[in-house]
Length: 495
Image (cartoon, rainbow, N blue to C red; front, side):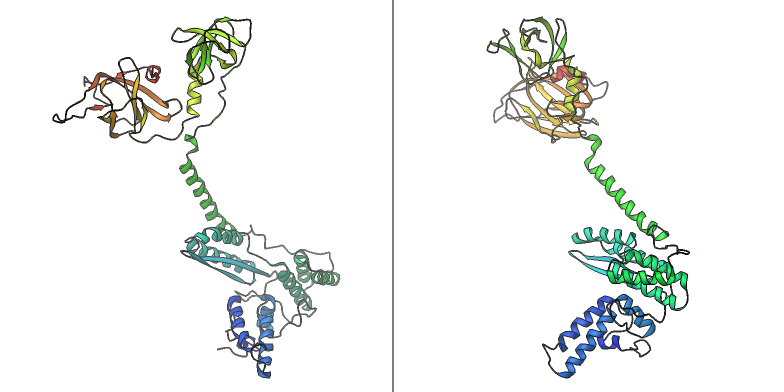
């Protein structure tokens, strides 16, 4: 129950709330009561008088500085930003002690309820120690309850950062608070405290009336003398560290999670091969093809017949030059001699540059059992056991070395593949990491092998049961079906 000692002018009783109620409760009580006695709703004299009392009570209690002065002295302030002098210095609204450097501070907290959030404020006139405790309490509540809804994921970090930086200090409120505190100490002949508070108020005084009042205080107290040590630097004290360390830990966890999710160390870096050198070709030089499907022509003319197509990174030897600097006579690895444009040839063999280009163009990772190449199809199947710790690509090649189909088998997987046509096939495979779709090879830890047998598939009748062959890419050293080592370049050859 509200007593006269707690509520000298009956402002709290007029609003129907207890002394010490928060700003949200004051606003809610005012809005609910003022609707009932508003002159537009009730034109009676009694309602008009009650309406004026509500407005007066709300004018004082909604303002933190005015409410603090009313609670401590029982004397309502005269007018906004007036020149009245308070009877006593302001005390901390939490511990009740008079503080030489009060601040009006607002701390925010957030509570989530799955799909919506509730935001609140802890505000009042604080000494520095009580402000730190209020900040930690508000931040702790936000840490515990603020994250559990989509809006909370945005509002909670904002509240935590504001609290960590010392809360929100409204300029005009703190200017008025410090000016009135300086006047209270000046009335007690505490000139140094009044002078120090006037200097602190100067930082908040952006309104002309406050600037005039600060100048008046400085004229009375003087501008020279000992300064008050400002205790309100946000980094001073342990509260800043107590709130900053969890935020720093959260940022570190998010960065670590992002690195684990994206794995930038596994992503290809598309850079120009550092070893590529462009210079004039000479007879006898070893060069490699730098474009796709370079046409090897019968004569050094644009319209001359095409002998064959040279793949990118094919290594050739320059054996002759023609008067036209655009053309060079080369010999391909298959022994075909013809003419190509010089600008398509880069210095050195293509093996090193091919590996760099393939590593920078991995493409999307293949799926288990995916047919990477299929030049013919049929009704036969094959079971592949890959007990290696690295992924594998298995190729079915004809006796002439033409790839009919190739399949991707992840590490430690056992996969059945289908669509294999009739015929006899040699089985080659490669294992490794970081498969490049652009080149059809593994770019990390690559190795190749050849099965010491062939598979023959024949068309069978409906009366004869069809058996499914099996192969294992990893066999015991004494197993006669153990794979034999194979050159990687030979494995990469399709034709």
